[in-house]
Length: 172
Image 1: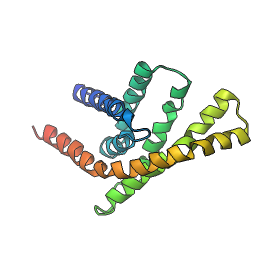
Image 2: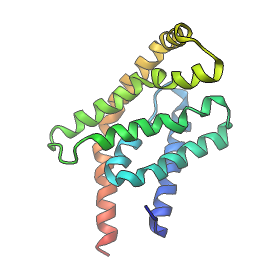
Image 3: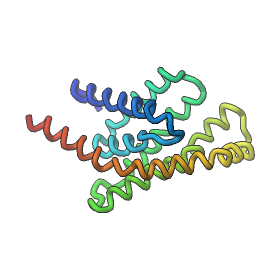
């Protein structure tokens, strides 16, 4: 997975765009475009999508602090990347938007549950306390999942822009 100079620049910009979009949308709790970008970048770049994803994770820690809240970010976005990688490449064109939007939404609905194992380990929570922690976050996970679904309408257009840009550069 060696990168050339152009890919390095593109992935750095995509990671920075992910971070900037998060900062801009912080006014709306649990509403952001991160899932949208992870899905779109994964469809467009496959394995190499891990570069912009982890640039985003690093920037998030750098500007917001490498604290305990950040540790789950080391795996939580990779789980969404992995789910998208498991999707077939030849999804019918008409089904793509709803499938991508649904995967993005599912990640939002499960965010607190996916975050919980790190919380349990870091804070010594037993099973009952972990379930209580997940339950307390369900309203926020609901907002997260619903917003991910509706923001997911941008996934296919972003994929098109990324793929068309790659074609344009290769044909020059």
